[in-house]
Image 1 (cartoon, chains in turn orange, purple):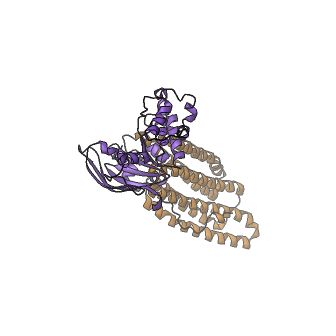
Image 2: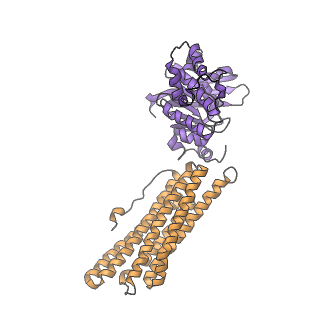
Image 3: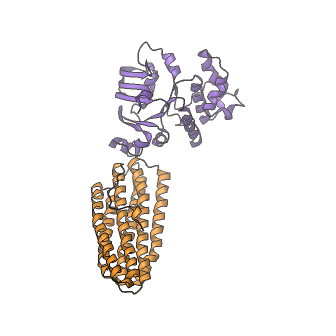
Length: 229
Length: 251
């Protein structure tokens, strides 16, 4: 970003991008933390993540208000305008991803101290992949790195593969032992939340490509919102 | 853009002044009817020169080179045979600073009509209505025009142009000296007028360009850099120079 006639706009835009990094980091921690709490049956940690969703929401609203203020006072155009429109959009995506983490924390609290299912081992892997994709997706947006943004969505396939494998495994567990149905369903919800979160990473990458090129693109996905349940 | 809808066609226009301060370099541009086409860019880019070519106001200054073609429908604008007075009746112009005549409000409108030999009382009210000024002056038509505010004077100048029922209206930074309310009124007038006229506007800011443009042409140092529908040019310019200018990186 430059100095000179638009130093104020540059500074304010950089602050918004920094805010997206902060929000991205909060959500990343919420996702990994929620799954760690599930794995460790750490109800205190789960409660903390559940409560902390409010901070994520507040951060999103703060970003929205400050971005609208830039639009109103600085009249940005062209790529500046696309960056700010994407900041609004990505802040919304991140906030929804925070909701998924909150949902996982709520499930952990409901599961209480019940014994974990053996299929659980795939869930931390899904969470790690999703958090890693999220980290790089937010970074590529802030850096306006189109190449990285185009590469990340392919990795969503790995998350989908884990999800599908987990889904089949959980169904098998349910058939084998009907007493596990409650727990197994909860785990299915957790994995579904992670799968949706990874899809939202793809949305962020699409916004990055739009920001850089001005063209809307849609990366191929193995499923869509209609698969939500 | 639909070729059949073009009102003004400019082909390979080249213009050099004798002092070399400003020129147009091989400009080709089609200006559609019933739309606002905005010509914008930094000072010295050729915007006003282009406007003045369109109604031959450049005849009054020292031009050493003028090549290319400009057509208003089928009329060869640059041909020496073209009746310049008739051309300017078809292509009216509003300048940056309002130039009201030292007469009453009413006479500012009727003076041009009388010279043109037009007797039509209704045109007074109609033109003031179209310029969004009628309600403000209908009870004081005999007052000197200079008693109007700057914004009202500028709308009076617009009404004066409209009274002659031109086909094209050229506006060279028409709101540069106006407050935001008056600016808004002029811009609203233009939005209504484009239904019946072809409007070519040199705006006083990039923001005004973005607000008003159906089509926008970015000029830089005598060259047409980019020409596109306004909603595209201000959100996704294709040329880096356009992007840098609309983002305020130079100017």
